[in-house]
Amino acid sequence: MAFPHRLDAPELPDFSMLKRLARDQLIYLLEQLPGKKDLFIEADLMSPLDRIANVSILKQHEVDKLYKVENKPAVSSSEQLCFLVRPRIKNMRYVASLVNADKLAGRTRKYKVIFSPQKFHACEMVLEEEGVYGDVSCDEWAFSLLPLDVDLLSMELPEFFRDYFLEGDQRWINTVAQALHLLSTLYGPFPNCYGIGRCAKMSYELWRTLEEEEDGETKGRRPEIGHIFLLDRDVDFVTALCSQVVYEGLVDDTFRIKCGSVDFGPEVTSSDRSLKVLLNAEDKVFNEIRNEHFSNVFGFLSQKARNLQAQYDRRRGMDIKQMKNFVSQELKGLKQEHRLLSVHIGACESIMKKKTKQDFQELIKTEHALLEGFNIRESTSYIEEHIDRQVSPIESLRLMCLLSITENGLIPKDYRSLKTQYLQSYGPEHLLTFSNLRRAGLLTEQAPGDTLTAVESKVSKLVTDKAAGKITDAFSSLAKRSNFRAISKKLNLIPRVDGEYDLKVPRDMAYVFSGAYVPLSCRVIEQVLERRSWQGLDEVLRLLNCSELAFTDMTKEDKASSESLRLILVVFLGGCTFSEISALRFLGREKASMMLFCCPPVAS
Image (spheres, rainbow, N blue to C red):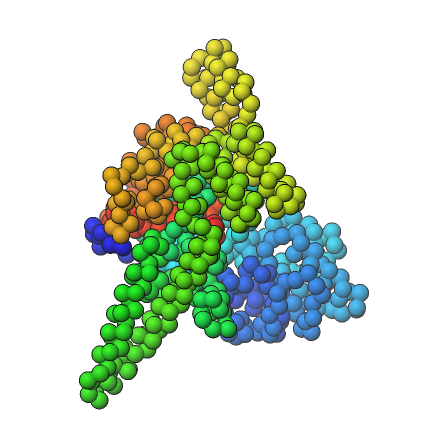
């Protein structure tokens, strides 16, 4: 894919500093328990820990053995136990059970609990209730940002979306604010801030409070990042529900990318062993295809294989001196590139087999019809067939949610029918799933005839137009109406193309969905950055039910260089997809800017 370059990309900040800070803080906490100790690590902290401080570093600081936090008795014989865990109630009960078991056995040990990314009072209360609070020392590893690539940071908070957008739990707002504060401390103040969504607004306000409390810490610093954009995931559920067709997105959908790496099984490696591969810009093969539409990837890999073979063939006819230089300078790199090429070809073949089996083309066709609002009856029939054939429980739910959001809810008859068929196919235990999806506004039922619009029309006769508009917004918010059709038309999310869309030389961000749809989140970001404000987007904000939840903060920053003003940090609160990352990378190239991304784990 040929991405045109308008200007050279601006220089990126050195995010490795975040990793070094996190490592130094962890070492400091471990050394507070001098001598040999065993470390118990929660499962979802193992990958982030490996990226920051591997086993050899831990061993250097007297960590003897490593254990996974599991619901079974500890077998450690060490006199000192350290627990690296998330601030969860079940973890506190686990620690308390170990301490109490030692007490019953008359054994005395030292215990330390390190919470990541922060310590909650509720956890200490559980330790107190279990009678072990005085036996355990508690601390926090305030690790909130992990660099996964040169332009990608992750907060590694897998529960963020569920806690905030489903349960309404605001405990991670402070973690987000602390992360933003850390970034502004290390890389200078952000001259231009934009945001949309309730979570974004609360995070921004708390972050500003932290900045004011430590006034002067960033004063005089030259900003390295010119713009920051905070965006709530529920502003755009549609994009997250669409099937990904860029290479990195398909790798994630098929194999699951966790903490920037992926485990490729024997079907990819063509051996009896699995292979863990780090997916970032250092992998030259991956870096060239990660943002490509999948239809272009095989052609690229074939050409790459031919080029590699040509480089190997250069050995023929070399004299001894040339061969020596070739072996010492080029051969190692060629072998590494050959190995990676083989892995990515294997991954492509595996993806193709799986998608062919699932009739991927028909699935994409149905999604495009839902996005455009055509053939809704046929699309509903396809979803019913998808459920009855038991193709995939997740895919079926995703299609139902996409139908619901694009149509402002399912009509009652279709909702009941699809729900009944799904429960019959996959079991009654999914009743809770439907309840959760409804609460999150992902799968809803349209209200009966004399509903919202009827109430609104009665209200509007009694009050002024302005007041009626506010009440209408309130009703819309309560009903979680998506208004997708109106938003799509207003922002031109469905491109009108004469002839076939050229995926080899894309013209806009729609290429990440085969030219059928421009991601709503990315279009909103594009429009705001062009205007440097929300001015002129009042109608869009109203349709998004975010009239009171959009903000702009622009400070006159004389020290901001033209280079830094071309750097834009986009913070997705609730996760993002690789399709959105690819779309925004494309936008950055088009605008001669560089997009940086920060989010909880990338949503799939």
